[in-house]
Amino acid sequence: MTAYDELMSFVRETEALSAVAGRTGWDQETMMPSGAAEQRGEEMAALEGVLHARRTDPRIGDWLEAAAPADDVAKAQLREIRRSYERSVKLPARLATELARVTSVSQGEWAAARRADDWSAFQGRLAQVVKLKQEEGQALAAGGDVYDALLQDYEPGTTGAEIAALFGGLRPRLVALRERILGSGTTAPQLSGDFAEAAQLKLAERLAVTFGYDLSKGRIDKAVHPFSSGSGMDVRITTRTDPADPFNCFYSTIHEVGHATYEQKVDPAYLLTPLGSGASMGVHESQSRIYENQLGRSRAFTSWLFHQMQETFGDLRVGGPDDFYAAVNRVHSGYIRTEADEVHYNLHVMLRFDLERALIEGDLAVADLPGAWNERFARDFGVAVDKPSNGVLQDVHWPVGLFGYFPTYSLGNVYAGCLHRALREAVPDLDAQLAEGDLSAALAWLAENLQQHGSRYVPRETVARACGAEPEAGPLLDYLEEKFGAIYGF
Image 1: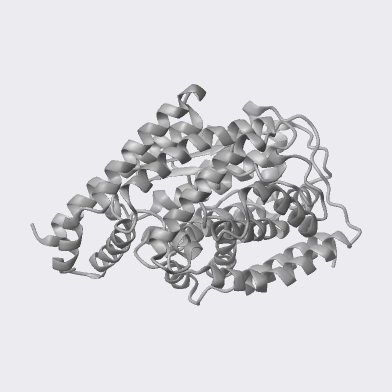
Image 2: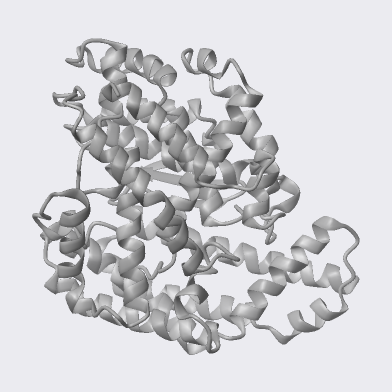
């Protein structure tokens, strides 16, 4: 075997073990008994110890030095392996295992605190997580920007300053659009009634299949916070239900299917290699957001969904497909990010980005986080936060240590805007197909132009190759202004 072959054999084993660890995390959020949290923390720490030892094995450095890539795919594999190795060797094994243990336990404590609306029960644990993440960022940054170092796990090659500049450009047009909508005098219809959970889950499964999810290599379960996990031949999603709001279930499902089908459509030749998953969380979010919003909330597709919901639930108490479309896209200053309309969504993300950056940089104490959150939310949304589960406790990301993840949601929206423009140019009769519940052409275009490549290309190149141009915010903002201007009559 050549040095490259030996390296790839070793890395495949590491990727397989990492997939097992990921499945353990899935079990924790869906099936694990609540009393098992402390033991699960020890198990996760043990798994992370094994993985960290493999990721920092000195032989990787030797193999990287000796490997001779035969083609561009091999060059890309080596690029990703080198990036992972150089980051891993900066992180002490003690810290890696402690992070795995603490965040595993933290997840269960967060869920309990969220149910009880008790911030004080979780404050101490979150402070511990933040301290560990600061230590991790300092080790990875090696004297550089600590938040930027953490950000590289989710969007390689991007800095906090670049994201801040992007958000600075997005905010004025988003705020102006929000004000025009709220001042339009138009009130969008709203569904009312009691929508049985079993019926919601049945239709959610149909939507998942409609959007290309292969259930022979996946499954749908319930969780407090919807998510997707896995890659290749085992990609699982979760959703949640609300008897008064079926859109919560349906659009959470479509969103997670966007993530899942990306993983399912990566070239099988990349299975259990560094190229075998999405290029970044921003690119991943571009898939979940274009599925959920530009396709799933389009006038054409909602006309089809309207009839499916009528068949499932009977009278929806809205006038017809046009009113239903307006109800799906109703703009309102809600508390919950995952339920936010397209206009408010990025404002939710900007709030979290600013707060988590301040936490990691030491400019905001965990004890002061609820006050900072509530003040910022009232300023941005004009509504006072009424309880922690609608505010600082609503998301799982910080409890499990995902600092640097939140801004990728808005990066994904920007990427999705660019992909949507290119998709409509490539499939001019897209609306006619969506009106029939036919996603095949859209899904095929995304699979061919983006999803199959996995991590072969760096994030921005992945999107630029699919779109034919460098990604920028204009297409997203143009789409939002055109769409909501039509709905709200301006």
